[in-house]
Length: 146
Image (tube, rainbow, N blue to C red):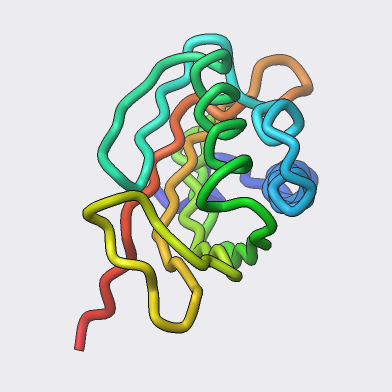
């Protein structure tokens, strides 16, 4: 079935785009709590280093750490590649993400020479009532295929 058959609507898409934009604003402010505002209570989080965590408390804790260390003062630039509604209340969102201004990375991880950490982020959104929640946040390094 195509997304249209599930009743994808512009209002739902706008709400999801707004959440992604708010995440960028929170990142740029270094505000871990605001960055996690739309994370569901049992959400899974896989970061670019392969660490898997569950729930907003660990997500917030990890982002407070990175905002205070190697991602301090960075800015984020997200471009939504695709929003796919698999049901009227579930959307998979593919995001090309860049963290700019990276000066150093943790030991064993190369610092990007241009200061831009490029990743491919997938967020799974679920609507409950009139609110969309992020149930899964999976971020991996982006590899350009030639």
